[in-house]
Image (tube, rainbow, N blue to C red; front, side):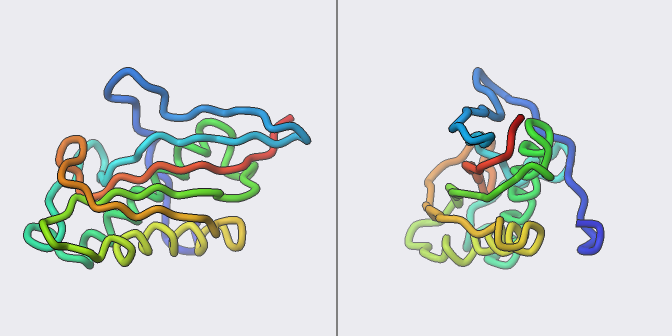
Length: 151
């Protein structure tokens, strides 16, 4: 990550009644780690705005990258990023204006960053959903499931 000029942000704290991560053993010294939705944020500020009419595709893509850093920060806090075996699934939500359909393009920002940082372990399945509303009017929210080594 240092070579890419990136640093993990401090892991965000839950803002309601939920956990940021849940680690569940699947045997063979591996566990699934479920990461709650990480909002597009810089520091403590949630980056809000609807895609296409308030936020450009390019800026929304950058915000998806910030969400990916948030996901990796949560994995690092829960199990250590160095224990990551693979990113299994990414669930991406984009606050979208009516008729906007480039959610997959925006979420490529997160997907590409996972692969850039984690190599082949960063490849994953993905869902890209346009949303009418997201918490705090965040532009992007990303949740994930990953496999980590345990024990």
